[in-house]
Image (tube, rainbow, N blue to C red):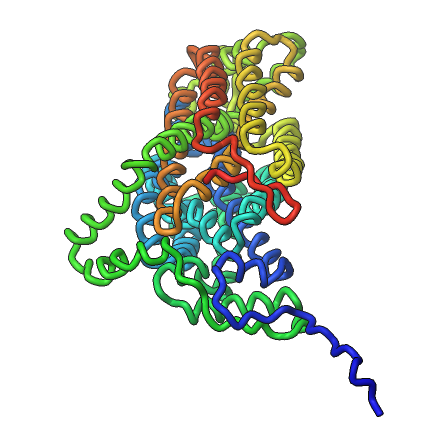
Length: 542
């Protein structure tokens, strides 16, 4: 006879017959393969955005004679993708909040790749400018929305780490930028296309390669659903539950018992979007659509959200002013310094090197020989970049990869504020010191440190995700990054206009603006708050 006191085996996974909050349901799915795949895809998209927008910086030094580019035109071309991002950020943010995150991300990735391919066949400054503008216009749909999309597959306590994980993948992916540029641009082949009357050179192929991550990620996201938090906030409870079950199966590989989750608790935030859903369904005319977009945007700059929105936008503007605006001319400046060092110059400041290597494009146009034309100062047009430009760019991207990993590990322990203040302060001071250092190698290292202010982008984005509710989150991220890209446009054009004549001023502007951003970080709402949950410290901005 069996012992009646024998205990029954406990189920592998707890069952939930009663409704639970969505945040708790996401925790129930555990963290596994599904999350890792999403983080990898999101990080690759972020890397793809960087390749699309910053890859042009490797093209400018070797294409300036093919396209007859002046320094000012280089500034315009380096910034035009960001102008496209700015012009469309509002639209994509609105559509992401009303139609869906994935609904925006996938089509825009395909369109961005298409415009990138077209830009590789252009033959003049104005045509490539328009093509790169369209690339920025479409890539904007994924560049900001992906943060909201990724964060909404995770509970609040894990969203910051997920975003930092994607940033780490982004950093690793960015290491490929100088490697790809070195492998592709420094080739010596060329192919004439009579039908288009162009000579297809390695720098043109490089533009296409920079667009490949967008194509790959768009295809990958065809197998992933819409954001569960978006679906739930828009009344699709059963679809949300189905996604949670699907995530659980992936993460446990089917080895754990099925979750007995049948319903979710309706939260205040979800109820607040009911009226918005009805308005979105009825907004069929352009006027009503624009009116709804205005109300969506105005909500960010009213009441309790005003202070948060203004600070976040100003911080992103300041970050991008340096990390993107100054980066656009990084390979070009390194190339100039390397040429002087090859000529025997051992001690010279960065700005004196810039002044000594200016190219007279009007002379290039008259001579029509892009490989041999030389100006009075000895500057010459080149079809290749000096190897040092790739080496230092590789070092920069490696620093980013390691830095994002470190930030992801310590963000919950030390908080976001110390990270922001430290990065802003060190980078800003480095930007100012560059002006006075006459040892080229040391100056280049300080230049590298200046450019690492991009670490703050993901930290500020993590703050943004926590500061705003689901129905405003994508718009908040898009608007803040729109101001960031505006900073890129301003920064690149400042460098383009001032570099050849007032080089020192460009570095002063960059350094002082970063130090000011460090001071402003203290005023981010609830930046000091920390919540301890289940034995783990998580930084909360709520």
